[in-house]
Image 1 (cartoon, rainbow, N blue to C red):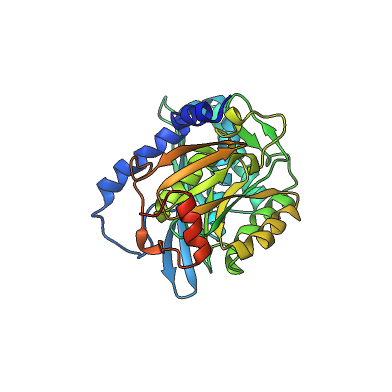
Image 2: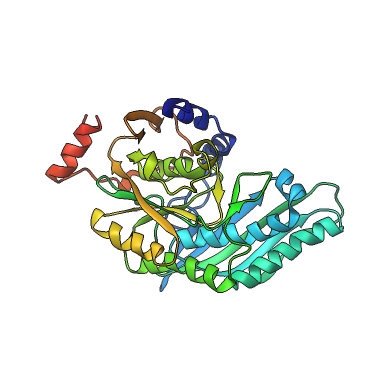
Length: 341
């Protein structure tokens, strides 16, 4: 498939288009009472404390997914929350859940998956809300965590580089494009791999991060870049990918362990080696620019994937972190990308 067709098709992918729902909610809650100076729309809420930040996040799951694979849905309700906390540079404290479903063996599998993940990641389930008097099945879970130093989707700056880190030691779990590198992995390895994220934050190897969501790799990049009010030039061929998986599928995939980072060029090599030393694939995939265009190149082709100035994805933007290029190299790079106004 040609690059332009690949990107055009990907733009219409439901995993990306559903992220536009966030912009609707952003308008509805804009006037809510403010508790924190940290902008809404990151992987978790971040509430400043005397010793760092309290982190709070929640995840809901499609009923079709819960019906099809209840055990894995339960597992994911813990795993994705742990990933959100990690993406902020945090460590998980505890999980609560909400489950509405019939009291049936199928529903019990949801709890079994949650318990298995709770044990694997050593995150306690400390409460929840349950209703067995319904014919519908709904699952959500929320997490509390703590961070000493934050990484944020709102912190990417022009002249940063983008790095993708993905655990490729897995396989698809049909029928969805979920890349499972978790459920058969040794629990001690899972915990040590997750612990890399707060290590990266505390050592200031990266200042911006986002875990790869159902929007896929490029969709997640757009979300991070829009939040920071910047754009990027991304090299498709540098994105870590299993050799036997097509780009059409891989760019729509939700990986059980996958993150996008923005950092100074000087830190990229050390950050990448932090992952590769543990068998996790990591590559520098692009450069952050001051314009709102997300350009993707492959071989001799180069096309616009998204322009957040023309079409918002999440509507979550904080321009206070956006800084103009001040170096000769940075200005030259921006000019080459057509971003100098």
